[in-house]
Length: 290
Image (cartoon, rainbow, N blue to C red; front, side, top):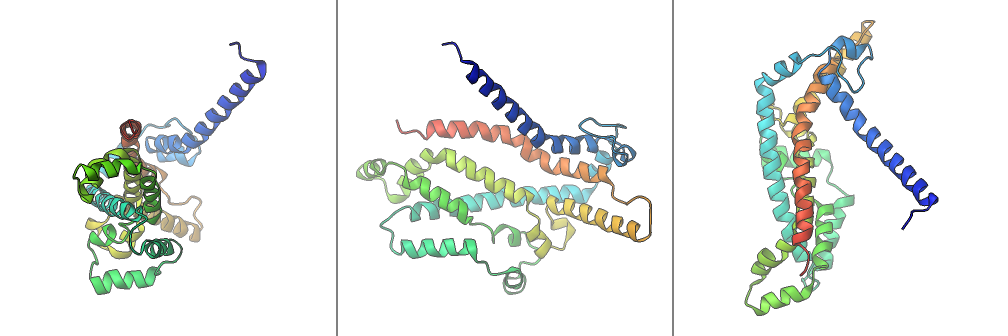
């Protein structure tokens, strides 16, 4: 059928808005990448937009030759993998249990979980608990364990499990599967889409986290790479304030160093997303009830 003029105008406007939205979303990252390959003089002069000016890779060489940077990168990988695995284990098992309406004390347990979303123990009591009572100072467990259970993610998965056909579990139970067997062989394979999404959420959050390390880890060799980037930014900010107090004409922030650090920190997550997206589509297909 021939499209009407109003339909064509709508498609043109819609496409224009989407392209503009994508441009304004991607532009800041493209500028950071361009600054990472540009000279400091060009960046300070405001000549760098989305294309590098005064091509420079010396900062990449210097940063990648820093052993502390790679130690922090290794720590981030350990924290991300361990935290994501622990979070997924706790979230999926708790969500599946809470999805059963015949669970004893279900309403009270849901209230306890939801209560922690609105009221926390506070930074100082948490610091005293982790650092003094448990003794996890300068220990990666202080970053991995406390945030293992994401309540928002738990509620999402609970709702997903509740919407799965009950007849499948009943048929599996008649065939002799235990409750654990039903969970492992029936529920989890049908939940690949939501599991893939939750893994991505947990992994990105753990990769970018630095506040927990700032509280509990003072040993630089045990800090994550996000903390390395935070230290660079903090040092640059302090140097700028020092120059401003001295009446210097220019601040002391090295924009090129900060841009290089941001690119190296975010590159793994950006590169892995297309592969995760493929598993999203595969999970939806495999999770359909045939």
